[in-house]
Length: 105
Image (tube, rainbow, N blue to C red; front, side, top):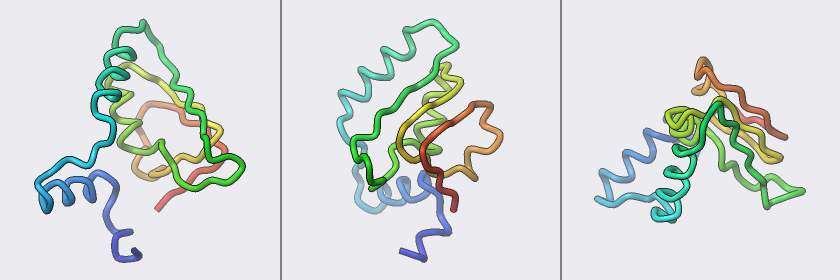
C-alpha cells in the first residue's frame, strides 16, 4: 500500500481500467441520475454529504475526483460530516470544502 501513495486517485483508477479492461465505477446508473439532477439545478450549488460511518471515519467519499466532477457541474463547495481526501490535489480548485476530517498525501 505504501508504494501506491505516489499515485493520486485518478492515476490508480486509470491504471485499474487499463489492466482489467473494465470501469470500477459503482452504481453507474445512480451516478448518471445524480449528475443530471445536479446539472439541472441553478447555481451556485453546495454539495452536502452525510457520512454513514459515524462516529468512526472508515473511508472518504469526497476527494479530488468528486470535487472536479461536481465543480464541472457548477458546484462551488462541499460540506460533509465525514472525511475529505486528496486535499493536496484539490488546492486551487476554486471551491471550498468543509469536513470533519481531512487527509492529504
